[in-house]
Length: 199
Length: 171
Image 1 (cartoon, rainbow over the protein chains, first blue to last red):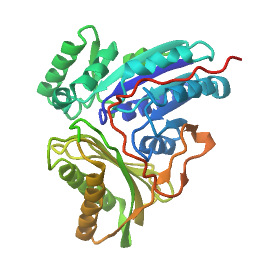
Image 2: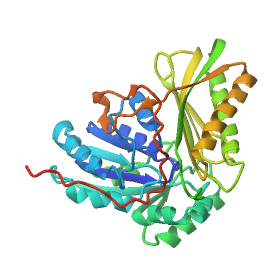
Image 3: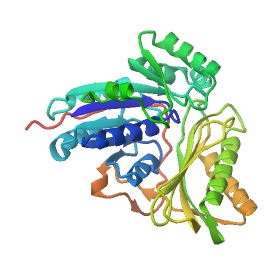
């Protein structure tokens, strides 16, 4: 089972990206499970994904980077043992700290994971404001991943993308930055990067 | 209140028209509601929208959803998989995640803004009990049950608690 962690702040477009990836993997005949951790008392993303016939495991009433980290481990084990997933896509809440999530993985006792990949999604429309107001959280989310996706390219200006690039480079100079619109189709290169079996 | 604190608010809102409305009207109504809600939630103090997200399942299948992430940008709306052209009633599940917005204030703003929009559009609005989530479960295991509203104490976000996990028992 491959594990893909899709992080990013609330409203950055994580769910849209996850749906696109899950549909692409399913089209390739892969068995995909999506683990969604939402803040709030109503799970909206999981309802939406179920409407699209995707297999969703929701984790509510807590955060998988702290209070639900044990649930994450047991859910991953269930996916490995009972569901035989090829790909588990993990979408933490937009307020989660990604590094804490990875700290729980050593307690996973299923078959060894084939790969662990992580991508952070950024909203260039709001990144400057969020970076100023919620600096610690945004910094952790940006610093976590080697691949940063500047999303919403279809509705942003060149200046907004340039500013998002500047902030991304300031926080995480080693990361690769890709500009895309998750609402539109994902490039074959992006699919190959996030789904390792893709030719 | 800590200006960075996040007190999640959720509600289920039932909207009803005297006659069936085309889905385009429903989309316009929910877009106006989310837009107004975004402004109302950030009107006082230094507040930052995480997101304000709503989802309505359509009769016969499909959904109408919308997301508002900034008062300065219109909500992002989508209709997908609809089999009916119109309906007279929809339930909108709503999550309001606004940093710096106290739960009590969200609980006042949402019905107020909703009632104002309902009046403007000639609809009726009812705030329903929330579904009670049952923790981690897969699609194949079913969904949550509907019961009394969960009024557990508001949680502070982002996380400031120490990571906690339990070692699985040895086989």
